[in-house]
Length: 97
Image 1 (tube, rainbow, N blue to C red):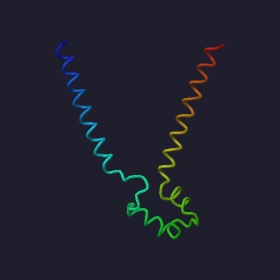
Image 2: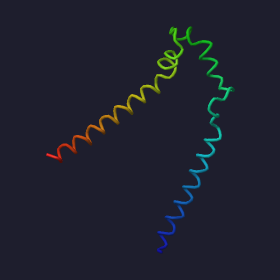
Image 3: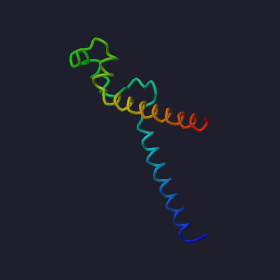
Image 4: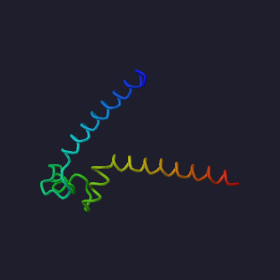
């Protein structure tokens, strides 16, 4: 093996170990599913949702007022996936002619 190949493998191994450490550290901070001790923000949503947003439905208030940027990003992802699928299917249809 050449010296550059060994150094590339070493860099890859070190990068993998660092990313695995960061990932495992991030997973430790995630609360278990169904944990009754939820973050403080949940209490704020329950206490102030109707007065801050004017929505009678808590799901609507959280979805469209508090988390609106998440929904915009999700819509952008759905559009990107839809365009990708249509372009792939169109290429296959043109090749089949």
